[in-house]
Amino acid sequence: MYPFEHREKPPTSAEERAAKAEQRRLDAEQAIRERKAADDAFRANFERLKAERLAREATNS
Image 1: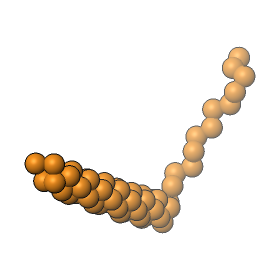
Image 2 (image 1 turned 180 degrees about the vertical axis):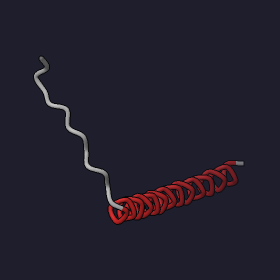
Image 3 (image 1 turned 60 degrees about the vertical axis):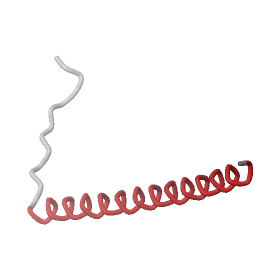
Image 4 (image 1 turned 180 degrees about the horizontal axis):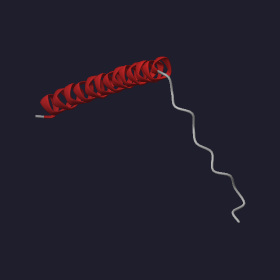
């Protein structure tokens, strides 16, 4: 009647679940490190531009 077969996935073992959980944890840590690096770069650029603007305003006043 239906053009597909119903197949159930075999249950994952405790080792597979632990490995997946560890991989998710490592991926999350990597994402946090990348986000922190991007935030630090943004903040450094913001502070540099702010210092340039304040110096420019000080010379124009």
